[in-house]
View: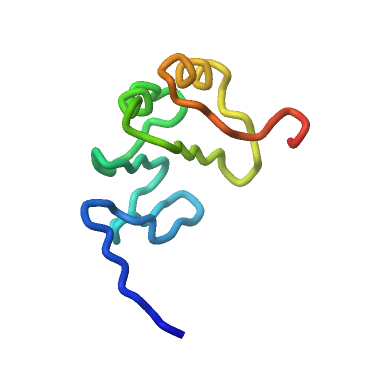
Length: 96
């Protein structure tokens, strides 16, 4: 088995997560977190649409964790993302 060191350059990897926290680039973030090429920090959750919309044109994939249970993101957030050209791919009504 060959092991290679991973070089993340400017990116910060998600090292781990658990109930109520994320460990990103070795740093603990309690509650919701947002990480992108623009940086890493706390996120205000579904109501904080501006932080996600600021990523329009810069992201290929947007992952939004919904907690321990599979759930839809709020329709208002999904619409705002779609209007900004960010496609949300998540659970459909028949998979929940």
